[in-house]
Structure formats: structure tokens, C-alpha cells
Length: 337
Ligand code: SF4
Image: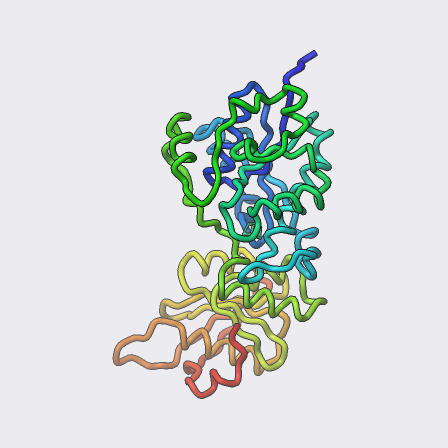
């Protein structure tokens, strides 16, 4: 029987989580890294999981798997018991949720403990010493949770007490400085790693505002609406329509990927411009307003006509509408979020 111990790692993809995996693997432990995703962070990886897993294995020698926790996360975000950070980021409850999920998977992976790349004092809200304790307590991972980068300044966990992990060989990282992590990375031959600034939209001032606003209408909170809300310029139209307009090719492509049966896709027919998606309304006033907005944000032809033809596609059926750009004074009547 294979007696090699196994640990589950919470893997953000940042340097600290990479190092936590490598430090523990360096002690002969099999590490199964889990990357949790929601529409607020790393959701795009779901569509290219195999590619991502291959990249992480080749770059860092880490076996990672992606887990979608959207449903639980959306629920938690209605009322996170530990509140929010600067924007709409419930960092403490986010960690608690991920650890709770990781704990449920221990048996499935034959794992005996969980690791994270957290470092005491590194982040103001979620990595204070007292907060780390709260996270362990409320996720029920107390002695199961080893934070290998800063374990030396915490009480020994079950893995250390059982001799599965040699506490003495663990590094000592603390505070906001990154010198120790950079040194460790170099020792592992890791030179290419992402910046610490995360990609969580809940910490983004503008996107967080949008999400917060949606959460005021509890019945509107669902995966599709959240994904829609996070792309492009957003408008709420007078008859209930939601309009998203791309601001770049990347956003135009993202908008098209979000299209569902019944949605109306709008594009300029006779010159370059954005892709837009109208959802939740087919009211003629919302449709013509959407067309006018698409023309407004489309490319202007110097000396050419301001009006343009807008191609509107719903369930593979095209219709066309000629529209002038929406004038500034009419923008005021539309909610822009
Ligand atoms: S920044 Fe976002 S992903 Fe990171 S802990 Fe906070 S809520 Fe979670």
C-alpha cells in the first residue's frame, strides 16, 4: 500500500500558493492543488481546464484541478458573516468557504491535511493573525490547516505533530515583504510567476459597485446575470432591458460568448463598431435605444453620415434598423452601471 501522505492545497495561482505546494511536496507529500473559480475570479479557466493544468504542471510541477463554486459563493455573498473589505470583497468568508469545500474533499483525495499560501500579516483584512484563527475555526479546519510559509509562527498542526511535516524545515515568511518568497522561488528555479495583485473583480471599485447594486435585487442574483454584468459598458433601459456594449475586441468576443437564446445581438452593419447584447426586454423603445447606443459608440466616419445601420440578430434571425447616435442629453435618462 502506498503510504505517501497527501495534502489538498488551495491554489490561487499566485507565488505564495505555488511556493506552499512546492515546499510541502519537497517534504515527500503528494499535493493535490485545487483552484476554485467563480465569475468573480478565474472563471474563464473552466473553458480551458486541460490547457491550464498542463501549463501549471510544466511550469511549477503542480497537479491542479479546477472546481466551480459559483452557486455556494453567490449565496454567501448575500450576507457574508464577516462582512466586506474595501469594496464588495468578502475575503474572510471567501477563504472560509474554500476551506470548507476543501475539507469536504479530503476523503475523495485520500488527503489528511490542507495547505494554503497565506502569510501572517501580508494582507490587511484576511491575513491578520487573529483573522487566520477565525478562518480555521469557522471552516472547521483547525488542526487540519497548515500554512507552510508561516507555520513557524503558528501553533503546530496535526501534520506537524504526527511527523508528516518537519516543522523545522519549513521557511519563515511574515509581513508584507516579499524577499523571503522571492528567495524561495529562486531556490525552486521559479522565475516566472504572476504578480501578487489578484484578479478578483470584487476588489475592483467599479465592478464591485455593479455587483453590489445587483445584490439589492435578490431575485436577480444568478450566474448568468453576474457574468453578463461583468462585461463591457452596462446600461439599464427604461423597459427593463439590460444592455452590455463591448469596449474592446476582447469584450466584444466575451459578449458573444454570453449570448443565450432570446438575447438580441447588435452590431453596426456598415462600419466598425462594438458588439452589444440586449437581454430581458424586447420592448421597441429599448431596442431602438440600444441601436442608438451602439451607433453612439461605433466608429465615426470623418465627414460621413452620423446615422448607421444596426444589424440585430436574435436566435439566428437578422433584422436591421437605421439609427442616429444617442445624443448626450438622452443618456441622462438611462441608468449606466
Ligand atoms: S480578493 Fe476575492 S478571491 Fe481573494 S480572498 Fe478576497 S474575495 Fe476571495
